[in-house]
Length: 82
Image (cartoon, rainbow, N blue to C red):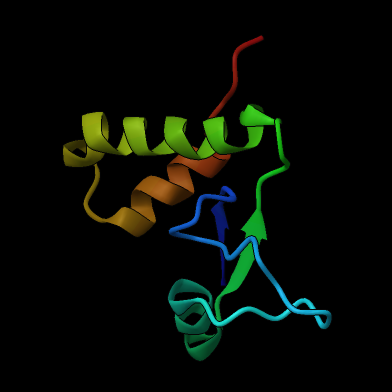
């Protein structure tokens, strides 16, 4: 399992030791739960925009689906118009 986040101080410790370690509550929580943190690229808002678009879709359309799993399956496999 993984989670995408930006470099905000609530998600990531910008001050790290020489071994790239920081005592940060959110990072420790993720490690304890076995969740990999994927950081958005600095000055690359498109990555986080994908996540924000998903949450917007969820908020507006969650009632159409029986469960979150069903919605995610549809969202990931929906037909894309181009």
